[in-house]
Length: 305
Ligand SMILES: Nc1ncnc2c1ncn2[C@@H]1O[C@H](COP(=O)(O)OP(=O)(O)O)[C@@H](O)[C@H]1O
Ligand SMILES: O=P(O)(O)OC[C@H]1O[C@](O)(COP(=O)(O)O)[C@@H](O)[C@@H]1O
Image (cartoon, rainbow, N blue to C red):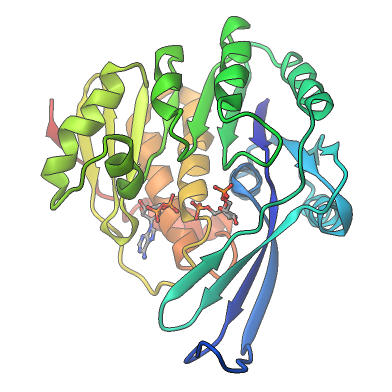
């Protein structure tokens, strides 16, 4: 079983406002409400690729109920922990540019974290845990290290997709996969990049520090994969951008969907790129058929041994 952990789920409220003007009344021309948060997005894409997973994490209030109901309609397995307060609403405003306003969400208490830890201890070394997304109020900044230690001690493989400054401290626990985007890679090493070539040594460093697979996403410019066999590059796929929210999570899900089957990182990378782009070309997260249609368009080149 794959377990996805979303500590701070969200309703993604996606609105389109042509010619948005500050300090004036604006009206939407389109609006959508999606169950969101990184792990939930991973589970939704896995489901679209016919791979089963269980959603773990904290939900509360009427917004939490919306998420539970929508995931139940999609026949996803959930084992959320109910918390006091309302799950957050994240506004994704599409105009000539994309603006995001993410809510804070409820405060999580120790008792809730302990309940999540107990759930994780039910996993086995044959399972995989995907930890992703930001840390809600109430939990310590190093909560992911605590959780990763717990699963590592049990021999349970795990994936981490976080932009938190603790990512480097997680690497010695050997995550199966991490997926920084190019902005996060620059922030991790307190630097900036003018080209993909400049990113290569930093991707390699993440492997040296303990990550098995490093998937570096670069939005419309595609992605790169770093592992002990070398560096691989997939140029961006072309298509009409509809909504890039969840593209990164889709990439994680696409990768995981294949990697759990045969541990072939190149095949997994191919599905990751196809899934990320298929979501960028969709209003909601991509459907399975849209992902499969893009798989054959993905071209991967090894750029370094
Ligand atoms: N506009 C786009 N056109 C084509 N592919 C895209 C686009 N945006 C994202 N993707 C695909 O999805 C992947 C993840 O998107 P990215 O925006 O880099 O992730 P994140 O949401 O984590 O920042 C990219 O590496 C790319 O393969
Ligand atoms: O947990 P975080 O880091 O605040 O992010 C939550 C937001 O990220 C998303 O999971 C989308 O993430 P990506 O675009 O990086 O894939 C949204 O569904 C959600 O609103």
